[in-house]
Length: 239
Image: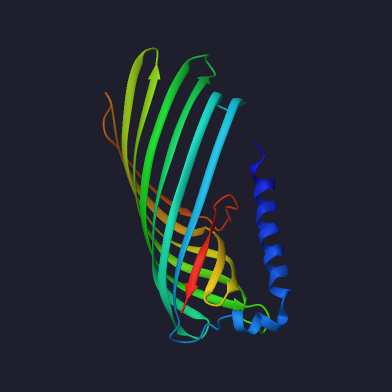
């Protein structure tokens, strides 16, 4: 599935539409914008959703005979401006992922899998605002945040009528970046779109598997690549 070109088109459309909207009604723009001055409080609610459907999708190691995957997350942020165009705050998010698939390995063996996972994340952050124009309606934003994430998952696999269960608990710590765009639709009310960019992170995952010894995996990553597929859309209040 060609998700990346579609995601690029969505992001480009959002930015172009926001820029065009910000140029309209110049007479009223001054009354609709909000200056990010010291003492301003804000709250933000954003959502993200991802789905995947596949049939006979060949990869290097396995062939997905069928696959259905759905994931979503919701995030709430709150904070205040302590210095012009610079704010601090705390964000919390919760998300779920469900997947059902049937795969065949290179040796022809068929396996049916079911996955369910949920995660909770706390993110203290510093938020920067770069105004575009003098009307204070359109901003480029960036959040530098500390990620504290806890994920629980269970996977069931059936192969040759043998059921295997895996229970996993994963903790992730890191520093990330969250750039995006903020557009005031009316006074104190804004549309916001962002994308996650995790720079440095470390994770510890412990897994219990049926009939096997418990495992522990410690992993560290330094990745500055923007994941354009992790777009979040939502609304903000500034007062």
